[in-house]
Image (cartoon, rainbow, N blue to C red):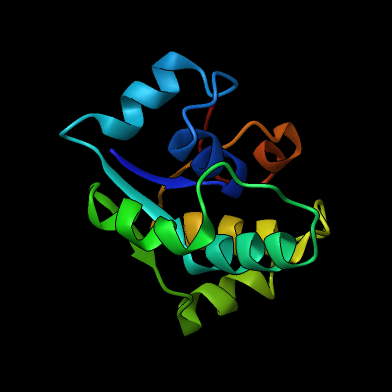
Length: 127
C-alpha cells in the first residue's frame, strides 16, 4: 500500500503522540507499505514553527535525520500535481492540505489524516 501522510499525522508519528492511533502507526511502519511526506508538509512545519504557531518536541533541524532513519520518502511537488490541484473543488481552503490532496489523488496514494473533510475529495483516506 502507498500512503501519504498529512502534516499532523507526520508530526504525531515523529513525536510518538498517542493521538495517532496504534493501527495507523503500524501501517506507517509496516515493511510492505510505502510512506511519503509531501515537501509541502515540511514547508508548513517550517512556517508554523518560525511564526510560533507550532511547537515541536523534535527540533526542526532533526526532521531530516528522522526521515533518513525511516522509510518515509520525501515527495516533491511536480507539475502533474499542480494540474490536479487547479481542478480541485474548494472543499478545503488550506493550501497545504490542498496540495497534499492533489498529490494523493494524482499518485493514487491513500491519505493518512484525521481531517474528515478531506475524505470529501475523490481519494482514499485512512484514519
